[in-house]
Length: 523
Image 1 (cartoon, rainbow, N blue to C red):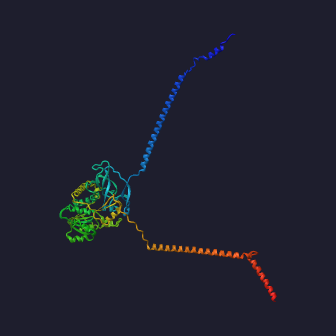
Image 2 (image 1 turned 90 degrees about the vertical axis):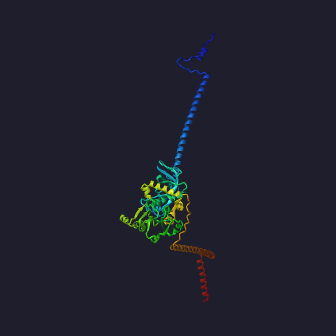
Image 3 (image 1 turned 90 degrees about the horizontal axis):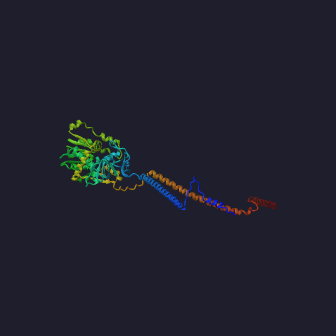
């Protein structure tokens, strides 16, 4: 037999078949396959790590952005939530009585260019403030407005372009209004450094009063030795300042005019030669000196101008520096204002020429704010502080008041009961207010209340009687009902065989038959 090898050869040929030249076959060994897997795995790991890093960076950026947005929103919310800082201030809400002067909360001011912010320690009260409250001054402010022309305190902030002042300086200021508050922004041309030894109350009591007094005595009058002077309202703040300054000139006679109630206290100072009651001061002066006086200092105006002018000697000087007679009541009276001015006689220059007399007037407010006298005022303040340092003058403080008690302080000045300066102190506690007593009822109201109470008592009594009557009626009804039930029970046996009427009829019939029988038997 012949063995055939074609099948195995074919099988081998199939196993060793080579690829086609045009066909690319990737031959991968087990080792190479492993490296490829590792490489792929490494690439995937790097890609995954990069993706994680990118994700984390994105999340961090998003978180930071969200946190930044949240912080910004929070800051804006806090900014909106924080209310503006406020301070207490004496505010005039409208011209008129004391009820229009109120303590209110106002936004704290900020110093502008050329201004300093002062933390107020003491405020000065002047008669001019009473006139502002009434609206009895020229060019009154618009209301509501913060009152006050005079204050002393410490500089808390400084605006731009400020020279000569710094934070912490102790100053006194003369702003046009707004002084009666815990903080006030004032232009530096109205601010003055105060001596280190001077208290804030003394500073608030000295500047305005002694400015007026100094200018009157030394600049307008040019007071000299041996002269005589008549001074109205000698017990007030300006009056006391004038007296002290006059005493720096030798041999000057002072006639002080004020109410009788102040004479004892003023006499104790020993500074006033003649204290005269204001009711009839002209005759009193004439009794002491028939010639009259060299100087008249008038802060009242009205008919006092005519009287004072009549007391002047030849070469005499009449000085008008106020018009407090305008303030005659709690509220402004146009009649009193008109009367005050029309009572003044018209003095012609020819009359002054013939009589050798002089008239002069002074208004510090106009000089300082409208006529730009700030440099002149500053030099005068320096002179006043020099006199204070030398011990020649000392401000007289009548009393100090809390801001909340400003109306009471104004009332005291209005009644002319103060001797010296009235001062407001923001640090003081207000006086305890007395309990408001119950209002007494009028006779008519009491009678009506009594009648109403009587009617109410009668109604109550009638109601009680009605209740008692109702209870009695109810008891009677119950009794009647009970009796009726008892009668019904008693009548029940008779109604067993018929009703009550039928039985009565039967009984009557029986009685009737018996009667007929009896009649027959008897007949």
